Length: 155
Image 1 (spheres, helix red, strand yellow):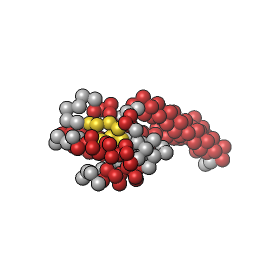
Image 2 (tube, helix red, strand yellow):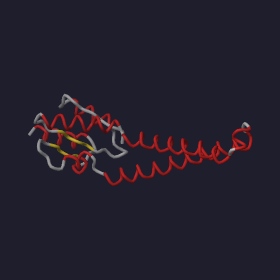
Image 3 (spheres, one colour):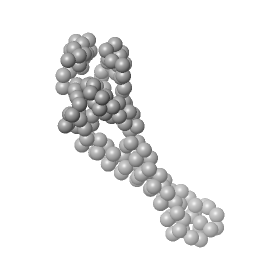
Image 4 (cartoon, rainbow, N blue to C red):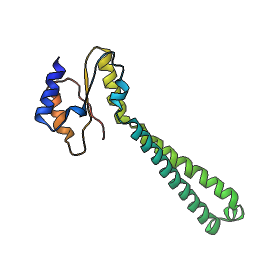
């Protein structure tokens, strides 16, 4: 029960509370929930970022098309419908694409893969969800004294 000792050390030497620590062991049925604690807020964040960046892309496409139909070459002035279609579509696509890239969170993927690897080989993983006021470097430094592998992600 080495992990219990490490949990106690983390709690004693930092401001991390018991509710912020998840223990993931081999065969843990709730591993996904422990790794992605707030899946509802993640979905909400992805939804709002797609709406926002999609709208920004649409507006940028509209502005570019307007400028081209008013001041651009004769081809764009004579075919405003095609100009709008040609610029709104990529603007919207690029906005949604950027929102998708933001939603991928490759930093979280590293944490998930590391935990899965540890659990697969019979080890225990501690997932500590820090608050914004807590120092990740302090907790990481403390954990490195007791573990071979410590990974962190952006909050």
